[in-house]
Length: 94
Figure 1 (cartoon, rainbow, N blue to C red):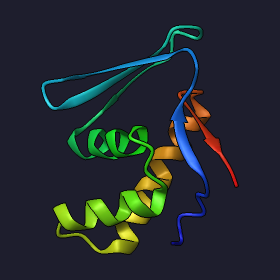
Figure 2 (figure 1 turned 90 degrees about the horizontal axis):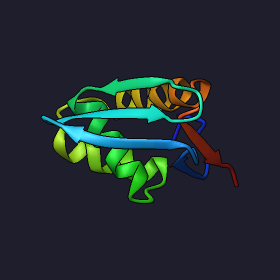
Figure 3 (figure 1 turned 120 degrees about the horizontal axis):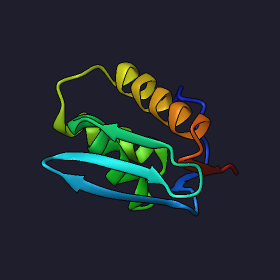
Figure 4 (figure 1 turned 30 degrees about the horizontal axis):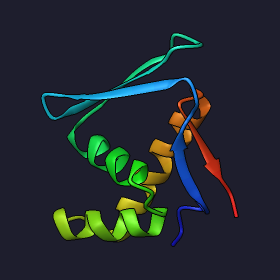
């Protein structure tokens, strides 16, 4: 996998999240950072929170979307990068 992500991605300790109308809303209670995810981002988030490794998430998404794997990998990597920068996720790197 070319995302460069290794290990499990998990919500940061102070983050709560809820799905509303097919989209996900994330809130860091400590910092007040609020973030919304569209339908695809919500599916990525859900798969990651179910303990999926990034490669497993890409495999699952590739079954649901008619998109090039490389593009899925880039999109997942970009999402995790933004969420990490905002303090919404932590990555347990191996």
